[in-house]
Image (cartoon, helix red, strand yellow):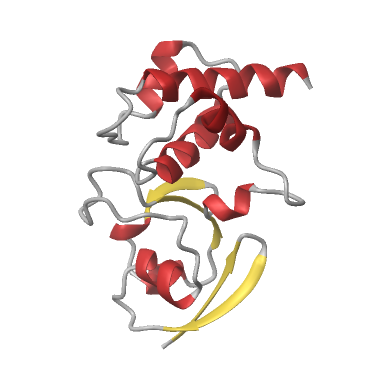
Length: 155
């Protein structure tokens, strides 16, 4: 079936089976490999994207449900070849190690900062509770989110 959607501001049309996972269509058909697969069961958050303004696990979404949707992936955060403040803060704070969880952590953090531009540490921890990381111990990730929030407020 032909699926039409908007990904990172670009209208797209892809041929896919209706029950094919949105994650796989993004990674294989659209070559947007920034979104990662961690568990394939919606438990780890590595595949998190924004769909119609809401954070979702793309491994749980049949592509047919994305018909007409507006999707933002980790690649869509970069503007004019400049990293999003969260992406930059993750680099500066060492919030990324192996990189599997990083895109989902950043997408979840974007959702948090959109709704709460002045989060406290507990707000960050709560917002990222659906994202698992095996490498960082989370403190550097929390630091990165707080740094990006401060940076955004000072602009």
